[in-house]
Image (cartoon, rainbow, N blue to C red; front, top):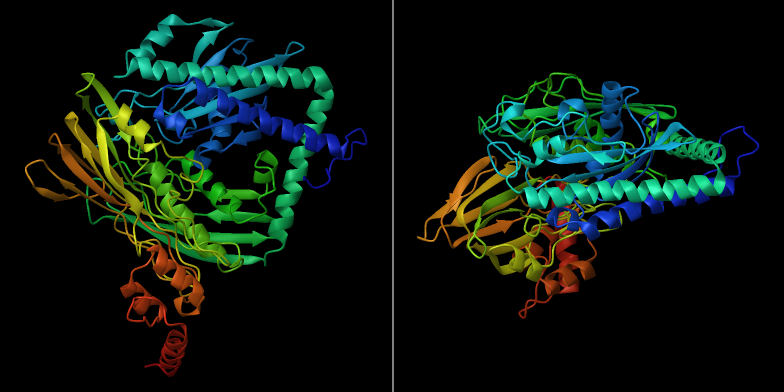
Length: 591
């Protein structure tokens, strides 16, 4: 339930504030359902998308953050659209954009915006955003590890009007479809996204019809004020001060040894919080750069993970948050930098640095490190149809989250700001729609960092690719292990290897493109989350459960948790307790 509205307007009913707030949530959820039920895209089916409602001032009123990092870029995209089109916006118009230098976060993440006019005036916008299978560029899917500039990634779509007055602009539509290798699939996805916006518009119209625009407007203002008050209350509970942390990533696609470090100073002052990334390293020549919207959204997402989950995620909740991102840094690169891997870069280094900094003031809320991003994109010819296909390894790349006070990390969840809301396609459906065959898919033992609360496990998978003319693009970071906190151990790094049809074994590196021979096998170990707290303080019953379930190996139980095992491999509780006491005494004495 929302906190009492802070507005002084006596006509605002606190109950109706909550009712309208929940109505907006339901609308964005229904928009998402419309997209997933009408698409052909595997991306939307696994929720690599989000939906939102904004007002005429580009304030974010509500969003459905299936993929959190996308959701908080809607305002910057709409602000750029409004600046470009000015008053040239009318009923029945629909706009499209993906350009990272017009407020977007990643070129593959394309958005549609539909204005809602009421009583002759622009009042609201409905918006949908989702990952596209292909938008042109040198490599199918858009992930080009050799990119040096934005034009070597995908087609740039600045704010563009696709429908005008309810009529499709066929010249514009044709331009878009001619710049994708998979026009039937992408065209259906576009229609699904436009349909999601239309569903949102209809539901908003029903809401306005029921309560009237003045009442809806006043109660939405009260909802935003209430969200702001709740967020400020959360921040006020923290001690004022400045707290530093940093996190790095390696390999910019040009230089395997190049290291880029985000340096963060978190300043808490009363009810406001500032994330200052001044001093972070300059932008890279390659594709790992973030842009402003990506970095801002990653920071907001990371903070929201650490506060009251009942706070509505809207413009009001973001008002107390300030994010400083020096232009020209690898977190906020200048035009025309390549930035297609920036989503993953910002997820890794911004998420990690914020968790490390906030661990100093709210240790009971933060998590240890989540799985670092490491994933692949596979493109080729499906021999069953003779047509091109594309797959992002959603099934294989699911890593573990970091442990946190009181609970182990989630297993097979994804990465911090990108994976939490994404689901996984059913294996049988995947094999029916892609020329792949899975031999193994299971939790990887010992992937989660040891701790009082263990890190979540990543997946171990192995599958054969039967496609022709196949390439796999690996992206992410397999150089840095997910960090442990308060004595917890790091999680396992991600790994991938290829076995070509001739038996050749290739140890796959991040940020590289590989050609696959037909019937090549891919084996993938997704990273695990970091551990939280001293492993010697883990409940022995939990250690025994982990052993029995195969989450840890006997070697790890002995090495990391001070376990003593019986001849049958089971845990000897009494001997283990004694062994732990001995180990603690050795540490205390400095041995």
